[in-house]
Image (cartoon, rainbow, N blue to C red; front, side, top):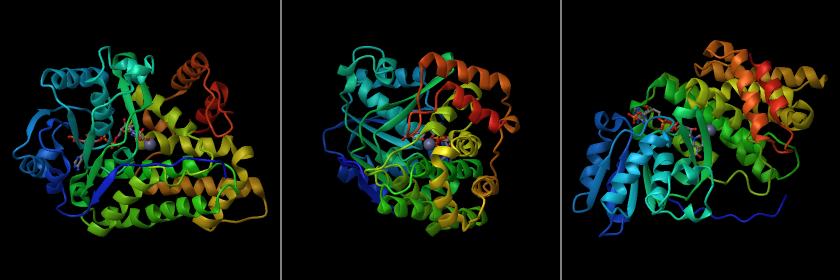
Length: 382
Ligand code: NZQ
Ligand code: ZN
């Protein structure tokens, strides 16, 4: 296990009817910028609960943060927040609203263009207003991490940056009852693959991190069919919500190496084809597992044995079976696992290879996924 420092300052308020608690959490006198997506919160009652909790506060609403939040929308929100002298940001929605709001919370304090913050062109841009969230979609972990991913549609680009942790996040599983089935599937896949990015590296780094990660993987596998059967199953949705948060809040990555190559390639698929984030990962991960099997083989075998009960004499054959079983799970969620099933082909692979070569990327726990390895991964899942 390597040395590490751990601090996660986000307060989680979890359970039924907890949205009203935001009134006690936001310091009085704050001028709040409340940010929303496209309107799902209006039809499921979340908006009404938030507004009733904000009685007596001074707040301004910003609507329209889209899935894969776009810089042009966020610039408008920043301008509103500056104009109204906001000093607190409350994000109400899924990962996109929360991620976008992280940029808004920094952008309000920054004189230059907010895209500089994403591209880390100016480190003075690190300051940020306090931000909190009311989560409506379990997937990204953004409610309890400092990451954010911002798109620049005009340039077909999408980049992650590190911002700040929310001061608090409210997680009411009942808010997820209205999620479209595709978003549920993508959220389950995102949760699963967040764990894989932090787990599927080398064996023997930390038995505790391994067991913790495997616990989340097993939970997702167990609840997925229950949720498919009945999305209003409170306990299953609560487990989903908590699993998604725990998968990317730092608790499974203490002192162990991490990969993230699958995510980096997936972001390009979203940037180029608009594919939903979780769906890009179910396409890329099987390719990453196969192409990186020399480096990851021992851990793939551990994963196969402990999660899927798959063992065998022949190493390559067993690894193949484990990858096939993983793909089968993704397909059982209702997601595809091939590029060609999602409108992407050889031109996409050429473009991603070109971009990665330009950026001289080196992804993965051993920094061995460069542009040509990324190409092999994508060719594997064509
Ligand atoms: O905009 P509205 O109308 O709210 O509709 C949204 C959106 O269309 C809808 N939705 C959300 N909650 C709902 C609901 N519909 C009905 N009922 C509800 N309760 O779902 C759609 C998708 O929402 P979005 O926020 O885009 O999904 P998600 O939470 O998966 O976020 C995806 C974004 O997060 C980034 C992704 O790259 C992508 O940009 N990620 C952020 C990470 C982080 N901050 O750490 C890590 C992840 O790996 C990921 O990259
Ligand atoms: Zn993800």
